[in-house]
Image (tube, rainbow, N blue to C red; front, top):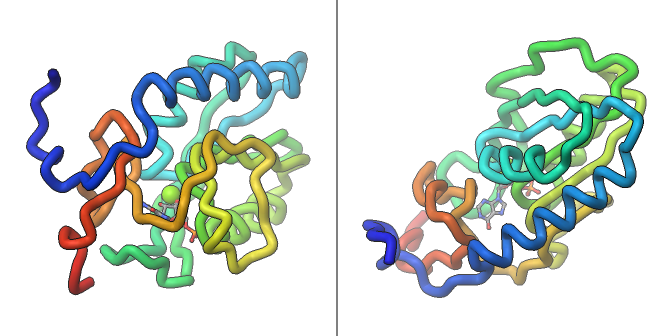
Length: 185
Ligand code: IMP
Ligand code: MG
């Protein structure tokens, strides 16, 4: 059993490491079939997607390249502030590229609606949205994922890249945080 200082803050495991691995292999194969013979750009949304991104690009052996953008909308709360800020911008020209946005979770849709528009204004030829988790019950923007790993209920989840106040990203599975951990925010 792996030792963990964070286990006590987790109410329950929602998606195990094995389930993540199996599903990401499937997603990799689906993306391979969709983009074979093209040269897509996997564009990870930091920080939450960092673990998913590394596993997804390994599961999808295309001739592709990778890029990252960092955004922030949460300011240590469990509900989005509704205002997306780019904290680290693209480092390359994406004109004419088939962009595969890799996101940790699609919640209200604010972040992805903003990013999709932003990448189109930067000249992307196409946008494909891949999200590990989809929380459709909280959507306020008309946006959906082209590929989603798992649909999750309306609970605040952490692990496998997802944080609460920058913590718990290194938990290897997806878990639900005990509400008392973020009570008062
Ligand atoms: P949206 O803009 O409301 O769709 O939120 C998207 C971003 O909020 C994601 O990229 C996550 O970083 C964060 N987020 C949304 N729900 C959760 C959650 O349950 N746990 C951790 N982060 C979340
Ligand atoms: Mg995110």
